[in-house]
Length: 263
Image 1 (cartoon, one colour):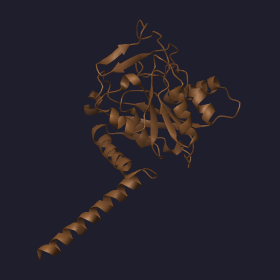
Image 2: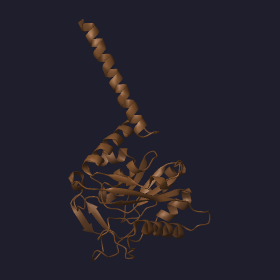
Image 3: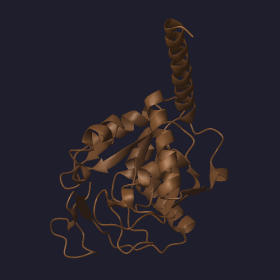
């Protein structure tokens, strides 16, 4: 085979492989870019190999998940958003995350993912406004309404303010998920390399009638999370912050059950 023909054959094969990968990435997350689809494929492989992720409850999802959707779950660690994204059959979820979770190395990536940053100690309406705008455009917002990883685990703590207002202002449905079995670590990033048998259970999707108050909506979602998980409700608010150097208490908090500022 002549050199020009060899080059043409290799070029054609490269184009075919590239096109096949592009097609696979687009199919991995319909409605999103190939880059995000490719990230989804890598995340699936990682979660299956490292965390043996098991997903249940797909029968509790409606056939159509389009339109405004708020995704909530208990919080167990930094990998929860990845697991939940893989568990639901709809485009990209933008997660609301605390400012104290910022890490310079990962921040460009998290911003590319569309995270909405929340200052838990200096409340501002900007994060809520951004979330409601995204929901009204038909998007999905993810939030951990307990505000932190509860200690001890397997309890449902009170929800911080904001969830009910977000749901009622945007007329969004609420998808309730339960995360369990994830690595229990106190250092950010350590859970990436700790093997586990993680599970995600989709408990269902809730809708609220006009006239429901924000508090009623929030209380109903928390009750659904308690019932679906089978874990007890602990009504003591627990607020803390997890920075790059590990867990630290919120200002004015005296222990695991202390009350700090909320967002």
